[in-house]
Image (cartoon, rainbow over all chains, first blue to last red):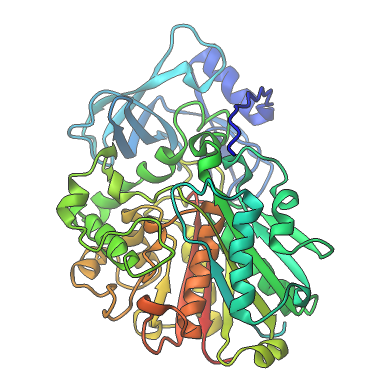
Length: 136
Length: 384
């Protein structure tokens, strides 16, 4: 015997202090925020409450992007190009979409964040990253 | 800590669907086979550890539902869930329970019944703000960092395809494997469906229904019960940062696997892994990962993984056979997958691996992998 069914699971997640600050800056200022750890001399994106290196809580927000460098990508048939993108001023990468074909991409290709006209405080307020060129 | 050993293993025959059994019945198959292999009765067990990723089945508290399948009623029982590493981490938890003196005989059982739920949904229920909202699931975990690895290390699609061919051919000699193909070719892999560039269908691990178990015993009990125990020489687990874009959790970097392996190498005196290990059962979720792990595990210098697979170094009969079982590419019931790695490596030391036995195997490496974040490593040996 096999029983079939489905479950619909609603959710209501808190973005937290650092996450909310990032999403508000994105919505109101079209600005990407990272968090800088003075102890590790490292800036991580998106903004977060704890340093991933040392666990510290002193993580002042800093403006990063909108320019960015391509780290790695995948082209998914029918869905587009997804990439790990390192915003200028950050030491790590964020996952997002590329607004363009995958041809000619290589690590280091220059990108720029494109923001949505209607923004709601969501990561998709960034429509994606446009491809500017090969970069250094 | 006391020395501990694996004295028995058991696996189901992993398959796309096991409609004929419930989850506890699936677990019972592996648990019973492990007890038989160890020559024990259920009453001989002091404790049980269970590994499972419950969101894949959409059924809460799996340790409650399947516990009796694992002979856990009336005994201490707990669950470990760390993505793909659930299985290896649960084995290591069992090692610690026996090594600490808390228990003498521990049964570790991992299982997954992917056919009963929706794995992509389970995989996609990650961080809701950054990763899930853009793209997650297997796509984000596997495909995204491969282009960087290929560009940096010069790995080709054909070299990755050779990993798939090795795995499916090895699996043809493993009665428990899910995907077996003794005649697989590089062209078969390169012509299989493109899922997310450069990953093709045959590059990927399947979703399987299956369970696997090991019996862990303290040194005294191991010597009483087993003529040639698989001694645990060292074991380590590592946790990592949460997001896909974080630096250290990519194919190229994979800090957790590097750190866990160096930790067990130091503890067991391994300085030349390619020479000192007789067999390895490593957790390769995708062909490219196996190549990346060759470099991270120190089987070859950076940039030479492609040469290693081309030269047949990791084939059966090569200097270091990697995944004689067919690996994760040939069977992947996620909660069980790490236990399978440990059970396969233990079987090699116990001399019970059958048609895929590496003759005279005395030292084995085991690794676990969980979404580029977690990694585990363990070394098993024939000498206490």
